[in-house]
Every structure is written in C-alpha cells, then in structure tokens.
Image (cartoon, one colour):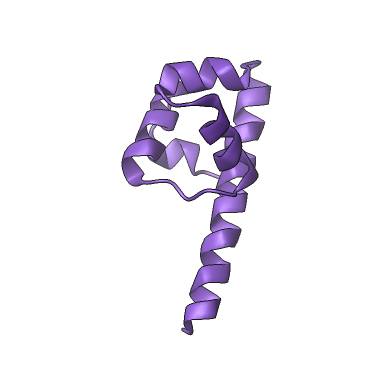
Length: 78
C-alpha cells in the first residue's frame, strides 16, 4: 500500500471514530466539557478528535472509552 493510501485510510478511520465518539456523547447527553473532564483532556482536543482532525494514541482512546464507561472495543463498535 502506498504512503498516500495509508494516510487517506488513517484520516478516514479518524473521521469515523470521531463521529462515533460524538454520537455516543450526544446519545448519553454529555457535553464536550463533561467528557473531556472525565477523560482528563482539554475540550479543544476532544473536539479535534470528534471532527477526525487529530489522531490519538491508544492511551487516549482508552481514557475516552473509560469516560463513557466502555471498553475500547465497545467504543470502536461502529
């Protein structure tokens, strides 16, 4: 797979995951600030994750999953 294809695939993954995080947040009635606080991250970073504009490390993914009281697998079940 070419580097360009890998980058595009990565961007698509981030967008899809971000949409899942945002949908869960709205479904559970949480604000960005509430989930950011629970995950111990900056609200602005959470917004970037939700928009798929920033990649996250596995440790961050785990913190966000924990903020929703979910496992990583449950968070990524889209």
